[in-house]
Length: 398
Image (cartoon, rainbow, N blue to C red):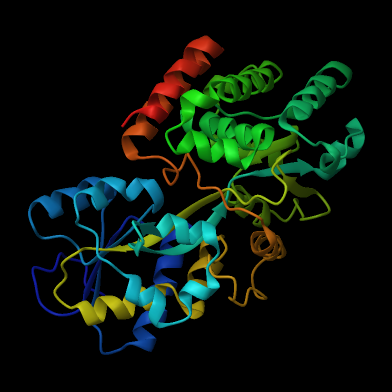
């Protein structure tokens, strides 16, 4: 397949800006674009890669030469673009076919601003997974499915530390986002979906007690983590989990890609997963979406691309390679891995799909920066009350 790799200065067709290069991301995008070109050979399609995607998009918008479409986090991450009225209204794409009927409320909420659709979600990653080593869980005498809350999980980790020679849970802290992700998952599991939404909807001060409680539980997890936790990166922790270094590991479903590639780490036999304690029937989401500029040279071509990105065919091709699940509920996932098929079933039966804080969907970009700064302070001081004040200030900032 041959595609343009330079910025279009005008003319018909579609220009796509993205940062999906190499690995599962690159393979997923190639599959999506190849499928689109087979379906629409009449549409000229050019893709441009840029590691600093958000900065490049903003720069080109200011220069009045925006890309036609780009791949970005939806939700509140797009709020500054919507405030500036630079996003395309793609409501007709949603309503002209069967997209609106086949997306659940969570992905639809992340795509809408003031009643108009501004994005087409491509994929979904679940972040509230608790992976476990089957043999080690049996050895330390724990049934992961029976742990019913984040605080009960802290008690169990302390018991494992006290009574056995095993590590309860590897907890990488080299980058603040991994700690922020644990905190938001603990908040969701311990205090529920309504409190979680209240905090992300700028009412954090009213829920300060829940914020403090979740920080305290995360601190308890850290106290029984390995001594090198502050210097441990996510990929290192994931490799060490595969090697059998801990009973549990909390992470998004992308971590399971490495498990599937290991012949020595078999699903259900060597590793398994449950929803993080307290988050049963909730599917906490990170996702990518296709975004359109408000003004494009070829609206018909752009609409065709958006419709294909939101189609069962496009989403099957993309997610099969990406190691994620489709946000549509009607995509045939029979050729996906058993793990992803089970994730899709859990998504379809979930009662709510909370938007991730850590991955920028449930908070505005400036808020996310402040939250990561607060978490960096937390892992250096473990001062629950002071960091709670910083978190409240970040959420309640206008």
